[in-house]
Length: 359
Image (cartoon, rainbow, N blue to C red; front, side):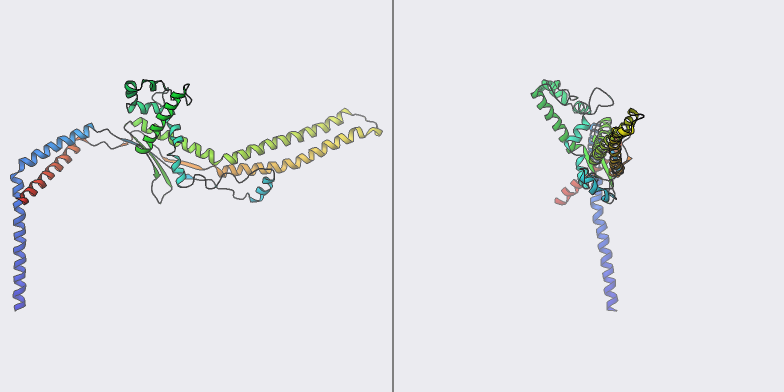
């Protein structure tokens, strides 16, 4: 029986504590209601600030390209021919296996050379101006030059080499500064997901057309450079073998023609003078047969080199490319005002409660 009474007393004390808790929570709630005008004023002020911020904030556009890269298959099945080709100074193994693998390819998109090459492409809106000129205009940099450094206006960014050495130095300095700013604030390079092989190149700018054009230009420049570099050695091998094949074929055809000419030049030859025909004809035939054998080997190596060139050529398949309108971070004016109103009223309420607790 005593245990039952203790349990009842405990339940009763719990009920009282809950009631007291609810009663205590009503006090600050009533206090905040009594100060409704302060909450309203704070919310309105913050709402106006949020509306003004959303209206004055520059909209940042993001142009994104995603693509998948498959590197070429290096050297498969060419081992039996590589040794023979190496004897005549020809490499059938093609490009290096590790070139631009992994993070190296991503770093290529951030390189000074690639970004500069992309910036020096002509803008579609104004064909006589480069993307670099468009960037300088949208950032109001040229306006500052007119006021502070009028000599910089003379720089023609279409010309890599300037007529004046001092102007050349200033041009290079401007290009380096712009590239550094884009790398730091406007360019995002990486994988779409760590588990996926999709690569992502994103360019941010408050100019929608500039973001799109720079993204496309940079992807084109890097991918073209990558393909040319990966296939450079294989392409050189094909060119060398093609020249050798053409040369040997020319010599062989010349030897065959020489034998025929020799026979034509000695019709009805005296049997006692056969040496005048047999020796030149045999020399020409021997030369033709020798070059025929060499030509057969060279043609075989040439075809294998062409196959190797195809294997070395990487496959770059664009998955998504930037299309207008681009993604942007523009905030709706009404949404910004409402969120700022709620935040202002909430902060004001916390401040009033804190002051009440201190008192």
